[in-house]
Image (cartoon, rainbow, N blue to C red; front, side, top):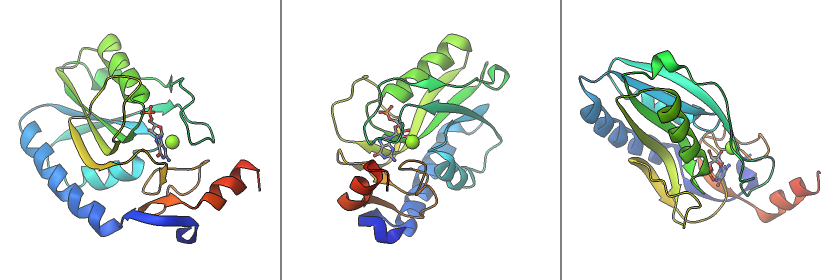
Length: 185
Ligand code: 5GP
Ligand code: MG
């Protein structure tokens, strides 16, 4: 899989030491508060597993399915959301986790659903990556591990057509890999 990368942006050790810092900040901010982490599937799974084990607080974990990308590298513009577990959100401080903030549509849809369908004490968002770009939806994340340019990345939970989620680093695919996949090879 690594051979399919044009370049590596963040190696595993860089990611994990950044997560140490991020987790320490989150731990300070949520100490003594009833916390529910709401992970947006599937992209946040690897990030979630490493981040949560660095937060030594009592917390509840809930997940919601969200899909806006098909096999393409650009957003479809439509976000499909799965069921929310209301009992884990009402009266609690909700921290959304997503892999990447791109157009903002996914995060905006989940925040809207959480605030419309439940009564959380607060809602904040934490993302592994945020692209530096103008967003279609004005939404920002309260915690960001890394900012990147407006480029399509894979690895550490992020997929291309369902592949590369298990790559331990984050990188950019070679053009020929993207072209071959587009042709269905
Ligand atoms: P948004 O709704 O902000 O446009 O995008 C959020 C979702 O689109 C992410 O959770 C992720 O699944 C997907 N996405 C956006 N940018 C990228 C990218 O550069 N690489 C990958 N693999 N997925 C992306
Ligand atoms: Mg995805």
